[in-house]
Length: 119
Image (cartoon, rainbow, N blue to C red; front, side, top):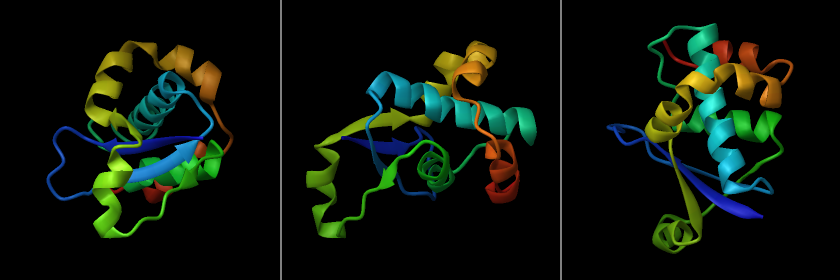
């Protein structure tokens, strides 16, 4: 299992989320970006999906697990994680939505985002 820290370059109020998965880092970057892009397609072009919602979607639809940790262990946990910067992941995959949609489309994911995203 690989550990992942999900964050955003421009986070102001939201903390990173942590999940573990059997997916390789390149696939997790694709999937996380796909979730953001699907929200843009389903809800609004200017929506920014919060890190916890990305993590919730990964757990619910992509067989990931939450990583629970004590705050004093955060630094040690971060050393074991691949970093998913949602800003970069999305920007690098913006023109690949159709391809990602063919690979990662899950029944109910769009409805999940509509229900759980704040806009």
